[in-house]
Length: 222
Image 1 (cartoon, helix red, strand yellow):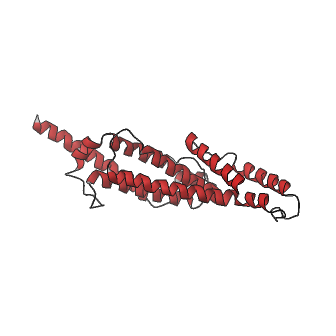
Image 2: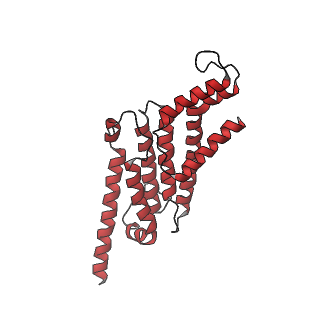
């Protein structure tokens, strides 16, 4: 029985390492992403790569003790100071973040680009929320992603809504290339933003709520 269990453990460890290698190749592969080629304008939605990788990571975290025991003797961590499973997860998240950033670079609209980064980073962070045990390196990784989320949100608001605030605050701004009332300029600029962004997605309800609150806060406090 011990020999049989050892054989199954070896097969499981091999399967996990094989999947990890496939994910590594997918995330570090050279060439344009197929979905970006089909939609050169980009999309703010959560990318299929993000969903796929984080589903796998969630499985590893949900079964942390068992998976850790399986790979501890077989997987050589790239982050040597961390346990093998922690290193594996951190490595995948690092590759994923780099891949998402590369996918966003061709987006012609910077507001859309940073909303895409915001949505995907928020999804990554949320996948770490679990009732299961989270090792300290993974907790610190989630905290680091939280800081990136804050930065992406601030940048999105800046590139998408800063001009609107200028129209509201400046009595005679040159927002539309002509002098007119601040209210008229504000409404015109708001309509332009609404038209360009009305089909952009923020899939997570909590993130949508946070974005609305921050926007209103910027408008009224500004």
